[in-house]
Every structure is written in C-alpha cells, then in structure tokens.
Image (cartoon, rainbow, N blue to C red):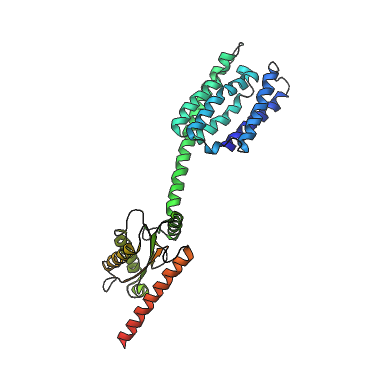
Length: 323
C-alpha cells in the first residue's frame, strides 16, 4: 500500500505544479503552495522508497494516516483555487486508493471524510462557492458507486484466487491433496524441526484392476481408498495422491510407534475397498524424521528403498508359490 500511496501523492503534486504554471492559475498563496508541494514530493518519495515502512503498519494504522492527511488535502484545495480548485478532480486518486485497499467498513467512513474534505472550500473560502455544493453531491454519488463496484470486483477476485489456490492443491479424482500440497506439507514439517513420519502407500496390482475391470472400476477404487484412508488420519495430517496409484501421508509429531499404527490402519482401510475380485491390497512403508533421514532427499530415498524391498520380497514369494 505504501508505494502505491506514494505514487498517487506524487501524481497529485505533479498535476498541481504543472497547473500552477498555466495561465490563470491562482497565485494568492504561493508560499503555502510551494511548501505543500515540497512536503508532498518528499512524503511521496519516502513512501515509494519504503523509507516510511508502511508494510509493517496495520490496516487501522493506514486508516489513521488517511484521516491525518485530510487537512493537507483541504489546504491543497484552498491554495489551488478554493471552491474552483483545479486540484479538485485529482481527489479521484484517494477515492480509488480507499475503495480498493480498505475493507468496506473502513471505506465507508474514510469516504465520508474525503467527501467532507472535497467540500471544505465551502468553509475555508470567503468568496462565492459557485456550484461546489452540487459538485460535492455528484462526488459523493460517484464515490458510493466506485466503492460498491470495486468492493464487488475485489470480492470476486479474492474468491477466484481462493478457488484457484484450492484447485491447485487438490487431486480432482479423489479430493485428496495433490503432489504440490504434499511437497508443501513436507517442507513445513522439516521447517518445524520436530519428529514426523512420512508414509508411502502403493496399491498392489493396480494395473491389473484397470486391465480386468476397466478404468471406471479403477477410479472407483481410488475414490473409495481415499475415503477410507482419510478416516484413519488426524486433522493436521496431509494425505495426498502423489501419482497414479501412489498415496503419501505426512504425519507431524508421529514417531516410530505411531508410524506402525498408521501403517496397520492404512492397510486395514485398503482391505475395506472392493478391488473387483476381493479386498484391495496395499504396500505401506514409513520413514521417520530425523531417524531415517534429516533432509527431504534422504527421507524420500529411504521410503523408495523400503517400498521396492517389500514389493520385491512379495514378488519373490509369489513366484515361489507358483512353482
């Protein structure tokens, strides 16, 4: 908000200075005009360069700043013509600023204050006010319409961004987290420095399910598995589909004992899924941080190695049984 505010103030100062040199510009308050112009340029540059750390200020603090700056705006109107101030139309800039950056509860109050500031030459000027009252009414109506429009568009934009953020992190078939969300959850788990477990879940013979019963059955199996396994995890755990038939779970705070319980619970959840000709079989392996790896690459290599070890052992066993 700070740099944007600075550029708007700088634009207003530039307009005032350019208009000052045009024929017919009022010259009655030159000292006040140039002092105000110098202050505005300095303040603008301080905002643009972040010399004033507006990024650290709360929205309430920004609102207070808008209130405190209104006397300067009123003075600017006074020295640039009063009721006929050539700077009057520039007040559309703070109107836009308030309408966009502030929530509605602030925008209404600040807008009312800006309308009063726009009308301030009625009180400050001794001469005739011309059509200032009429222009103030028009300004108020324009401000109300602008606030309503910008607030509506901003709400739509926020909702669209929220939906996009959700869709970018959710697997559309199962409704679980996707690979991106899993990666983010894993990164967060590492950042805490606390113990956590990562489990890798692989569906046994999933290709055969698709080949024998079709992809519709395969999709149903994935959805049912997602539903059953979701019931076994805690709030705060991240259960994700990270590949075609691969799922993963990040369980913060889970150590060796919890990892074993989760493995059993997930295998039992898989057994409750109808795979077409019997219960679904899962291969579930776990790795605990920091025992099995103190960085992402090591931990995931441990999981892959354990997964292949279990699958190779099972394949060897089945081959022996066939013989």
